[in-house]
Length: 420
Image (cartoon, rainbow, N blue to C red):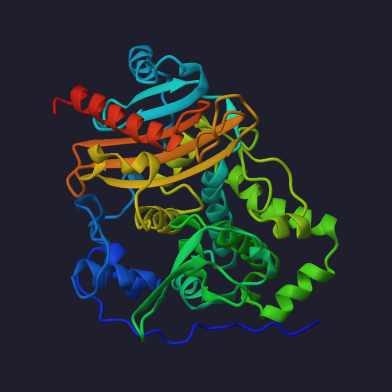
């Protein structure tokens, strides 16, 4: 058997850690995610760059799980009156939405609304939260009690981009701390980053190349356990020499079975294949789908520390908080003062139609837009605390703006419910 070797990330140049500093801006010391230093320098006015809004400035300690003490909480029955109100926000094409909303602003009296909760569609990039689940599950299996070792694997393992990234147009932020040069472009063959950075590129910038690479690493971690990380050469050899049927089974074990283990119904929520063409060619997969109800279950279990365990759930929640910028649902001005932990995904296509011009997010054949969000408003001292899973397939309509608008309407409704 070939010898597998660990690869450690070279020492990065970071400023000293600051107490109670905002996680997205000062978290580079904790995680080794280099782009966070660029965000901090921009926020501090040292370099030019976009400043964060107030809801994005929670401290590391404040980005935490809020339902650790309520692990027995399950989705309550849908409240008819609350559901009618939510459906009323959807407009004339309400039948083209699936939505689930859990309002926990009054902890003693949770209220749940659901409409078309079992209607499934392709999750798009929302499926990347399931990839994160698989990676953290494999990491927990390798080191069930050694949390520092888990952190070390995430922070110190270097992953090199290979042909699994082919092809993807999503850009990521590549920051060089030594030269203070920021480059924004799609990932290229030979790019290197820590496993934490690949997770960040997958969830923050929604890079498909990063997602396929994390899927590959989850499979390797599942296969080799504490012998992970393996050398680049060993990883390439493993996928080249292993039969396709065995790779398919390993993909299921690493990226689908963990959902079942964590209480998710995989007949309603599943990321069945890799996120790039080359990844799909190398590893046989199956269909991917999501329902709003089961996505809401995933959010609830995350807050309870039940996605793998408390360490894993907390790290995933932090990754969902420190997104590069807020888009779609999370971009609603009503949420500027709120902490928002979100992921979105879209999939649209067009067909010839007289008088219709195909545009991004305006598909007339398929126009999927999916959003999941946990909202704490205002950030740091929330009076409103709720979760939303929203799927839509409204044709010829700007679905990104549609989700932004619905985020505002839902937030205003809950403000009204709770006397704000």
